[in-house]
Image 1 (spheres, rainbow, N blue to C red):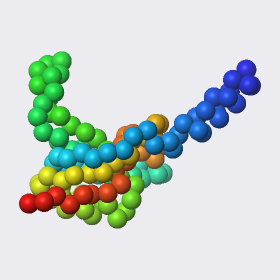
Image 2 (image 1 turned 90 degrees about the horizontal axis):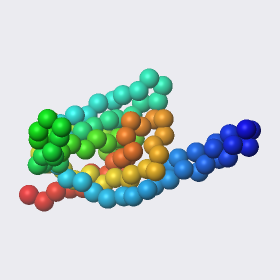
Image 3 (image 1 turned 135 degrees about the horizontal axis):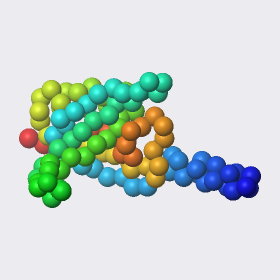
Image 4 (image 1 turned 90 degrees about the vertical axis):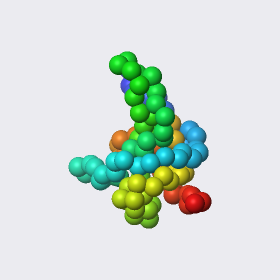
Length: 114
């Protein structure tokens, strides 16, 4: 039994903090808030456009993300206030840590051309 617990703990330590994928998403930020009791992070929601088929009809195509870099926060807040679409660069974690609500951590805001 102890061996199984140790193996599980080692696997969890190795799996957590591993980047699974990275990429960019574009859309309009509709929600951005600072959440957490002990370890705060910025959690947001972005409407990617279009709709998905849900159980009760069409639902908005929404992507939720986390921001831990304080230099990225003002850029997203500005996009939220302006309502302008933005592009976000992100890393998808294999398993997010306890300081994040989502598996997607935004690392940068990419300027959009007008």
